[in-house]
Structures are given as structure tokens and as C-alpha cells.
Length: 378
Image 1 (cartoon, rainbow, N blue to C red):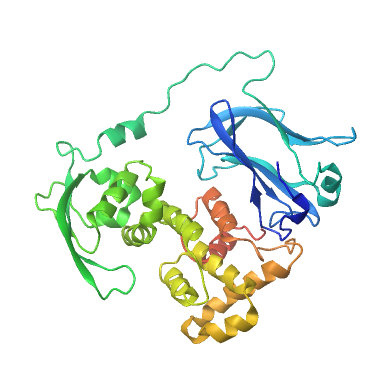
Image 2 (spheres, rainbow, N blue to C red):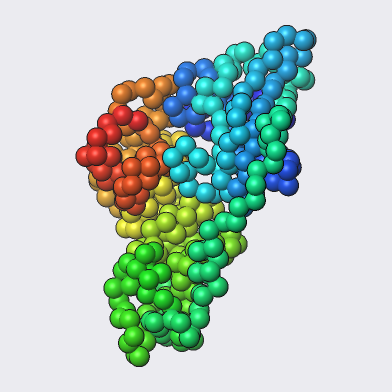
């Protein structure tokens, strides 16, 4: 149910989520874009169904919006079983944690389907097609489970690290704090695959531990756990987002860096007083999503207040292009400009991931990489 549908934001790219509901032991929710997704056709509402459980599931689904006076229903869905990946998973090809329509229905049409101002969506799900037996049980590939079992195993580890001592503060880098020194054991293959810069710092079979300075032992443990396929607890990710970003950037753990960045974007409170600090930090760490978030904030803020309170001479001049893109995104009614135009960073990263390209880097770097590999349209 989306109460007060007429009052929901109609700016493209802005969404509202439904209350969570349960089906087949999974939690679900709808994400609706009353003004359309970034690349929806003008006047269309976008609608997506999201799996909010940390397990994948295969279902056949359909959603229906019934006419209050018995008219024709508006419906969507898949007439085949599709796989929803676990929540927060990276999209692989056409498979992800969400499915839906960028052009679900015209907003002007859905207005006629409101019940006391509320848009009501019925969801129908089933796990198998009619007449089909339940699919056979097939055990998952045990590699990740086995790798996590070997995490921290001193007997089989072939490299070790001594972490702690003096740690610089993440903000000003003027203060230093002493932390206890901890020894961590690891396997070089896990680092070579997932933390190449860290792997280059150590040598297999070396009896002397590799010293790691300016990283808290707690953060380093998170990094190693991630390299073995582990998932960092959401509370830890939120409370230590900047520390994880810095350490991941330093040791080449790109996916964890971007995951922590997304978490930081969701929790940081931007103001005209701290915007320069946040955007320069984002630029220094190549945090394209955070930079985009900052530019969206600036472009939507009161322009007079921005000119009075924000010292633009403290912001690198080349970031003005990002600000102009954010302004264009807010003004443009369609993104069918034939090229990348006003596409968002997350879309660039999805395209890069699909093509096997590096997903880290600035917006301009992502565009250059995609263009070089033959993708010239958003």
C-alpha cells in the first residue's frame, strides 16, 4: 500500500518503499518511483519488487492493481520462474535482488485506481509452475564455506601480519592514537585474489610478520574476513564506514570499498557547513557515488544559501562538471539523449561490471572505460 499516492514525490529517480511483507520465508518490499526511474519514459511510474532476505529464491510472481469500480486491472510480472539474488547483491547479467518495470504504467492512469488516495498492489507468488514437481536439492558449491572455515587458521596459514600500534585519526590526520598490537594469520591465495596490494606486501613462508601501521586491528580483521568470502555485519559497516573505506582503498579491496561507500552515503548527514569536507574526501578516495550524492545535495539546496555559505574556492574546479550534471539531472525530463548524459554512477558501475571492467574510479573514468570498450549509449 502506498498511502497518499498523489502527494508522493514526482521527481525522476526519487522513490518510496512499501512496508515489508513476508512470503515463502522471505521478506519483500516494493520500491515505486512515482515520477519514473532515471531512464523511464515521461509520465510513467517505475515499480520494482525487492528480495530483502540474505538468501536467494526462485519464484514466479505477478502483481495486480485492481480498478476500484471493476474496470480493467493493471498488472505486471513474469510468467516464468526467476531467481532473486540475496539482498544487496551485485547484479550479475540480468539476475539481481530486484525485478520490475521502468515503464510500469502511466501515472495519470494509476490515479484512477486509487482507493481513498491509496495505491494498493496485490502480489501473487508461487515457487513452481503448475504441474511441475519441486526442483531437486543440489548442494551449493562448498568453496566459500570451506574458505571461511579456514579463516584465521594458524596451522595452514602461510603469511602473517602484525597490526596496531599507532593509528592516525581518519578525519584530520593530526592526532595519533595507540592501539594494542594484534597478530593475524592468513592465506596468500585469498589476498592475491581479493586484496592484491596487501598480497604484494607479504611473502609466503616468511617467519617475520608484515607490519601494518595506521589501521585498527578490528578493521583489519574485517578486511581479512571479507577476503575469505565473509559478510561484514551491517552495524559494523555503518559505524566504521570511513575506516573500512580507507583501509579497503589502501589494500585494493574494491568491492568492499564500494559497499562501505554505499553505506556511508545512506548514513551521512550533509549540510552546507560540511559539504566541502565531504566532497573533497570523496574526491581524494575516488568515491564517485559519494561525490554524486554531494552534488545532488548542492543542486537541490537553496542557491542563495549555497553561494553565501559554501566556499567554492576550496572545491577542485574539475568537480564543477559533476555539479552541472546533477543540475541537468534535476531539470531534464528525459534521459534519451543517445549517450551517457545524466546516468547515475550506480548505472555506470553495473554496465562496467557486466563488461568485466573496473568498477572503481570517478564518473569520468567509468565513462572513458565504457566508451573505449564500445559502449557509447546509456
